[in-house]
Amino acid sequence: AISFTAAAIIWGFVFAYDNHYGLLNAFLGLFNVPAQAWLQNDTFATFGLIAIYVWMWTGFCMVILSAALKGIPDEIIEAAKMDGAGRLTMFWRITIPMIAPTLGVVITTMIINVLKIFDVVYVNTDGHYGTNVVAMEFYQRYFLDNQPGVGSVLAILLTIAILPVMVINIRRMRAQERTR
Image (tube, rainbow, N blue to C red):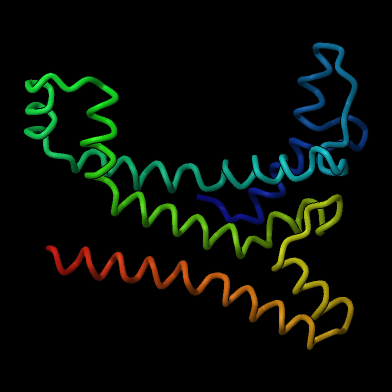
């Protein structure tokens, strides 16, 4: 429920290395593990940004999926139990098909968000340490390197990459509306 930039700053304090005051380094220090420069290390930086992004979007995804799970009628679950369906069978044959439209919306929304990620990368690594993404490259080329042509091409490529996912999402929502 906070802005993504604020979340990136908070997580920057968790991964901080300067003077060993980062929360993660302080915790690992309890076990005599030497401090690491998590977001300044090519090996760990991408995983650190992934952890931040997963933390930021988990609440949204869980609320949407929880609502979908609560929308499964109890009669269907009871009928499956009476027919002798086990947990795995109920999950794959009842739960997943019943929440498939919602699952599709969540997945496509997350794909779009991952493709246009900028703020977390900008705040924590500025695109360095092997963490550059298309939106960050666009920003660097267009605004910092004074190459508006290259920046515009990158923005158009990003839009082209996102469009098919959006079209799939829109078609799925329209099909779902027709079935109601």
